[in-house]
Structures are given as C-alpha cells and as structure tokens.
Length: 241
Image 1 (cartoon, one colour):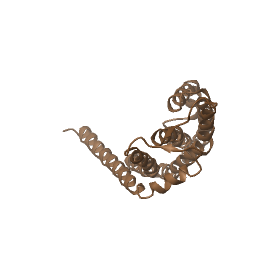
Image 2 (cartoon, rainbow, N blue to C red):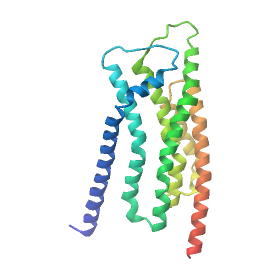
Image 3 (cartoon, rainbow, N blue to C red):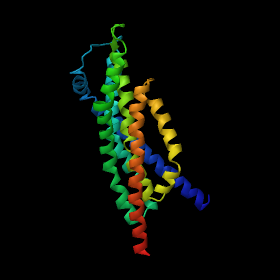
Image 4 (cartoon, one colour):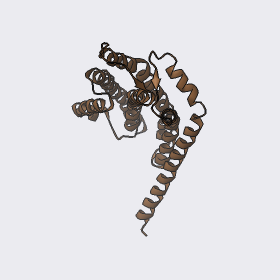
C-alpha cells in the first residue's frame, strides 16, 4: 500500500471516529432529554389557546421524541463542531487553530438565537395568520403530533440558518471563501435561499416572505463579517511577510 493510500485510510479512520462520537453524543443527549421532556412539553402548551388531541397512544410518545431530539440536536452542535475542528486541526496553523476554535461557542449561541427567533417571532405570526383564514368557517381541531410537527418545521430551520454568518467567517478565515466571491455569487445565493425558504415553510406566501427576508439579511451580514475577517487576515499576512 502506497503512502498516499495509507494517509487516505488514516483520514477515513479518523473521520469515522469523529462521526461515531457525534452520533453517540446525540443518542446520549436524547436519552437525557427524556428526563425533562414532559416539563418542556407542559411549558410549550401552557399558554396555548387551543386544545390538542391525540389520535392514538403512540402520538404523545412521538411528540416527546421530537422534542427530545431537538434538545439533543442543540446540545450536539458544539460537540460536532469540536469534533470537526479536531479532524481539520492537523492542517491548520497555530493561529488558525485558536481562531477557528473560538467559533464553536458562537455556533451554539446562534443556533439558540435562531430557535428563539423562530418560536417567539415567526411562529406566532404564521400560526395566527393561518387560524384567521378559517373565519369561523371550519371547526379547529389540532392533534398534538401535527401541531408540534408544524412548530418544529417552522423554528428548527432558523436554528441552522442563523449559523450562516459564523460558518462563512470560519471558511473565510481558512481561505476557502472571501467576501468578493460571495458578492459575485450573490444572485445565485439569493435564489438558493429563496428556494430553501419555500421548502422549509408551510405552503403560504406570508410564511415564505417572513423567512426569506431574515435569510437575505443574514447573507448580507455574512458578507460584511467576511470582509472584516478577510481584511484582518490580509493585514496579518503582510505583517508576517
């Protein structure tokens, strides 16, 4: 076996190790989240103006699992980011190691901010708008499973999408991206973000608009932050030279 093939095997083995740690952490956090998931469920429905129904004994268990999975996902993000950092660390300089490691807490915090934005801002607007469409023409009947599926589908994407600025800053610091490249592909990025918004939201125009606008603002914020990182990186390279 050649040295190149041995290096590839070593990289794949290391990647497999990191993926196992991430998957194991997620499963462990799901189990731990089940301890408090009932309290979280009660908190989420305490101010709900409608009554939720279950159609079968397994529905409430499925809802508990969905909530536990979201909680576990939030806890897994910094673990996954750290494992990815460990995987790419050998290819980084000492300065790059310190800079990229600092992004890990930001990923977790922005995920939580995105979830809160989706839950406290976007979800109430969309939910009330959809309820208003009935205009007393329909009897409102919500199952627990359908309600929480709708809730999670509305808020979870914002957790990931709010991480876009940090991811772009991270890739800029590694030299993978730069702000000028992001500006050149702006119209394509807008198209992708709009399509993403349509796919992750319920099929109504208001939901699409409420998601598209924050996404476009996040992209422009990402370009601005990328410029800052890029200029600092250039200045550091000039000083070293």
